[in-house]
Length: 105
Image: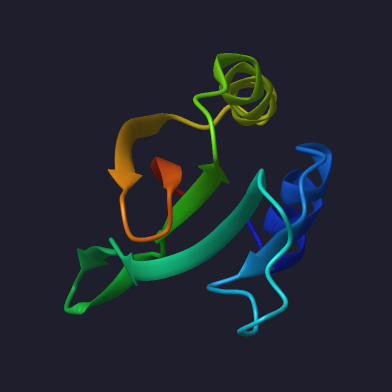
């Protein structure tokens, strides 16, 4: 999946989003999303990269638990045939929930 395809997929989620972070002071009101590529999981063959695979994290931030929004995000990921892992954490200093989707693209 190219970066452009990831951006198009993020647009389908109908949330304000940014790559890695919003500029300080320009973060929208929740809910919003951030995505980034924290690394790769390439497949080797003959001492070279045979198949490239990037890790992709999509972070959804909300001020209240929002199961309907999570279902919307998951429906977009499912539509694109993406296998993902999901976790959640409360960020006390920000008063926000972060739902993290981790996948490879």
